[in-house]
Figure (cartoon, one colour):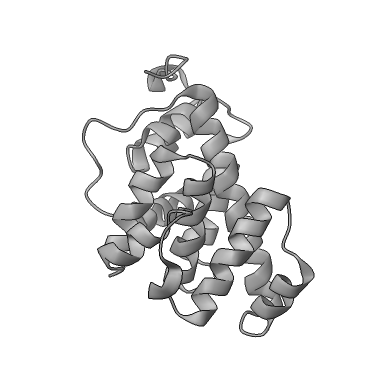
Length: 190
């Protein structure tokens, strides 16, 4: 059970209440709605990286899931395992994303992304050798995005741990990514 009661949507400012109603019904969204200054900007950042990013979806999910595992982020791992399946990652690949998993199921570039993610999460940044290896196949913009995604999902794991956010009783039906993107676009125009 969460450490705090999720904010009552009826008590949120109208714009936030409407924004929350249009989002995938995730407990994470319900919790962060309780911070008016953070709520919409955070969801917009997540949407930008998940929907409009330059990273290939496989690379993005590899980084998110490895980060979730390294941060003991069960909430994110469960949700992004579903996303990984929906983008056609195999169960063997999904299992290999645990820190003790067999990374031989991944391409050489994907293994560099795993190493990059490990170093950013565990050491606060990638070593020069790892950075240079990633820069051979990722653009500067993609490297920035990859590091941002790792940082975002480290933060999500920290929020989930701190507030003991539990999994939803009824999982959402899809990835939620498209719904988040549509919500951000709709409310940006208002």
